[in-house]
Structure formats: C-alpha cells, structure tokens
Length: 97
Image (cartoon, rainbow, N blue to C red):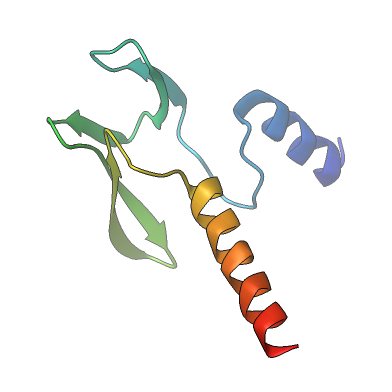
C-alpha cells in the first residue's frame, strides 16, 4: 500500500492529517452531554470555567507537555473573531482610500 493510501486511511479513521504517530482517539462527554475528541494518552478535566486537556508530545526525543484550555462559555467564537478582524481591516481600508 502506498504512503498516500495509508495517510488517507489514517485521515478517514481519525480525522487527523499529518506525518506523526497518534494515540487512539477517545470520545468523552462532558456534564452537558457535549462530546469532545481526546486521545488515549491525554488527561482531560473540566471545572466551572474551562475544559483543560494535557498531553505529552515527543519531538526528536524531547518531551513537551501541552496544555490546551478552552472556556466553557465564551462570548465569541474563533469564526466571529476572525470576521471581526476582517471587518475592521475593511473599514480601515475604506477610510484610507
């Protein structure tokens, strides 16, 4: 089997595209019933304000501890923030035109 086919199968199985080894994916539900994709080698915990995911990543024999923190309730989404930046840039461009 070619590398491209292996990569495609890996992507279809995990929804992760990249040239690295991944642990098995585990779907966990929070107290509100929302499912979150995590990894077998990660630790996930939630408090009143955030979801925190901790995972060790090994790169060239060096271990990096990665902490990802996501707010439980957010005032905005990444998409809304990006649209706000684009809108602001367009307004500046119109003023300078």
